[in-house]
Amino acid sequence: MDSSDEPDMTGVMVIEPMGNAGPYLVRAAASLGIRLYAATDERVHAGYDPWLTDALAGVCLTELADSERALDDMEAFCRTRRITGVAVCWELLTPLAALLAARLGLPGNDPALAGAARNKIAMAGAFRAAGVRAPADAVVTSVEEAHQVAASGRLGWPIVVKPAEQGGSWGVSVVAGPDGLDAAVAAAGRFTRAEPHGLPLDARVLLQSYVPGEEFSADTVVREGVPHPLPVVRKDTTAGRYRVETGHSCPAGLDPATVRAIQDTAARAALAVGVRNGVAHTEVKLPPDGRPVVIETGARLPGDDICGLVEAATGVSEAAAYLQAVTGRVPRTEPTRDAGAALRFVLPERAGVLRYVVIPEAPGTDSRIHIRPGERVPEPADSSGRVGHVLARAASVDEARALAARVVSDTRVKVS
Ligand SMILES: Nc1ncnc2c1ncn2[C@@H]1O[C@H](COP(=O)(O)OP(=O)(O)OP(=O)(O)O)[C@@H](O)[C@H]1O
Ligand SMILES: [Mg+2]
Image (cartoon, rainbow, N blue to C red; front, side):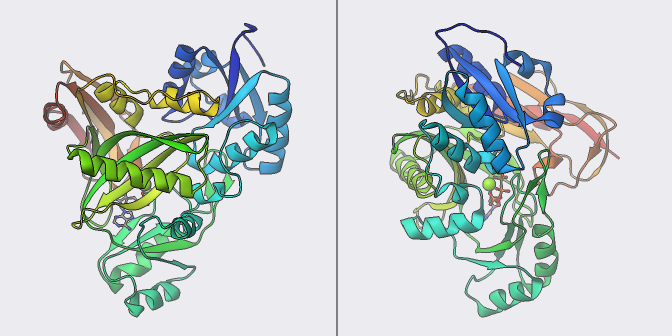
């Protein structure tokens, strides 16, 4: 399954490029003269969009849920090609990338710590060990245990209840008092496998103390253990029981000292979970004391088109910097542009069947529809309820935020 054989080009193996960061990796690889290979499952590969299939120099078909087999298959595949780096798009597959890079002797992350970049229980332990500021937490496997922890008062109220291994805010609830605990623990504990690869998940539930304050994400490229901070992004979410993201914007609208504090905290979080040659996407909250607290980190590029947002605002290509780091080159992370960008999601208020969605066109904006008319819109409890999004670019972030907000408020969407 190989095409394109220019002898001078080196290749990067991407473990499952089908995902939000995939198009950015494809574009960055082309700009850096890197050939991209993919490892995936046969069934998942059958659903690849043609643009992705066309962009790949070759595909290793394996079974990603079977780590040993996948490692053997990918190692054999990479050894017969000029692969100089390993990358990954899916958080749940980041430990596999660390193990593959180690087997091949390529720059990668610390395999002994890599599990902590995927599992929020292991992550809490890694943050404690490294002294990274994170919420107080407790692990439970039943509703009874959750009530015991809550009654001890150790986490206070509200309590955040979340799955040990999941993303997209699936199964995450902010619970104000004991009454909401049963439903929240059930919602968080229901994930035993992750599609589309059927990866087995740790079904334990994590309880965390609630961290108040504004929320940001900060990505970090790391090369040979040295962190290179990327621009900080402001994250807007709903305020209720479900913290659904409503948008992102960059720059974050903070003073330079606070930006640096967030970047330093994010870099320490990345190093704590073993990121050594790669990228990390870290979410932090800024409580009233002004000292950032880490909510989570993942050894992958951001989702939600944050790569596009950051590039529009600052000129920095996170995907290119990531590919540079995993192939042992110096990552380019200096901003080359001083503009603003804002992304807003189109989120209907309730579940139902999508009848129509019309996002108006406006200069300086691009929009995309995620759910088609006739398809079901889930309850707005997590990121799967997004009908579409708008990315706005402007001279300043305030203008970009206003432009995106205007387009979303002019969007016509009907669910019934
Ligand atoms: N301890 C906490 N204190 C305050 N808010 C929290 C806490 N944990 C989670 N949240 C809120 O819930 C959101 C989702 O939680 P978290 O990031 O842990 O889950 P996730 O499924 O990995 O999310 P996503 O993939 O959407 O980033 C956070 O972005 C934040 O707004
Ligand atoms: Mg998160």
